[in-house]
Length: 421
Image (cartoon, rainbow, N blue to C red; front, side):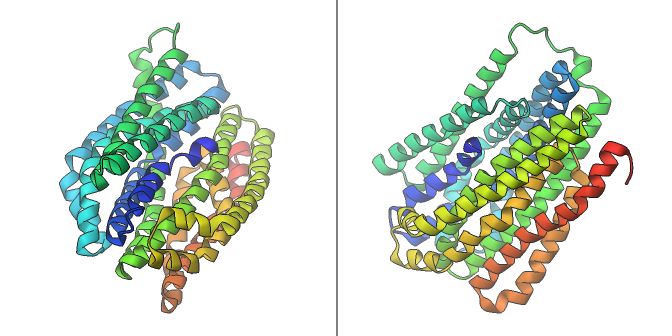
């Protein structure tokens, strides 16, 4: 959970550093670009998710050679995808920034950030694989160490480049690249140390046709599921951008609260991925069901705690993230939506982890598509309420994700462990 909590800090640190200038246009630019990267990299989060699930299943099934093979396969895929993103950066920037609909000043600032941070793509995706591989083996402390290193380096580099050298948005982007590179070096060193003394992997193990086909199928479905989820966040950000720079900046500040909440609660989802994946690999139905109950119950308790923190310290945190009085006022108006969100989101995150651990990727994909449709329907019904209606639709989406997965869960449990649909 703590390791996950550090994940959104790169965007948050960039936003906070630029926000100290009090310029809503610059803040909107870095916030827009940060959201784009969150969503762009998030699209390939299947690299982490599937690596956790398959590694945990291999651990439960007692297949140490497959555990090592999964890391190599994942890093190769991450390198290929990351290189592709760098090669396509010009059309990607044109499409993504154009879609966001920000003002000319905001878009110009966001483009500066984008053209530098895109070079971190292969590094970020490789770090997803390493993180998933460590979590899949229940080596959460090592995963935490890597994440802490990335974020401490990012904070130090951002402070130096932005606040000391006045490098502005370009400095914030360069700091992100430096931090991800350092994190990957540390992760690879840890992986090599864990593999010391073991024989080299045979080529047949790396290129096992059955395992490759299964990995690609699961990754495809998780990617499609994630694309539907990203569509919600891009739509949300785009609607805020069309309402003006101040509204965009306020929503971006509150979005950081949601990211903190999401990555915090997603720590329990990671636990579900590992525990359920291991039980699934060992064919232990009782262990699987017990893990699901624990994750949901503990998740709700943590959600209440997060909501309480937002209620007590939300206004002060808003003031830290921006010096603009106008942005602060707007953000405070919509803070109640953020306070309620963890209690609806927790079921979605917990059950996402269960579905990933069991590699129920096709069902998760289909249910996420239905949740997207419900979000858009809610927005159409509530759009007359402006930004409040947009936030209301987001809460509907949280509730739909968890509710639909809970309804489908009993049938999937029977089918996976007894062969009955």
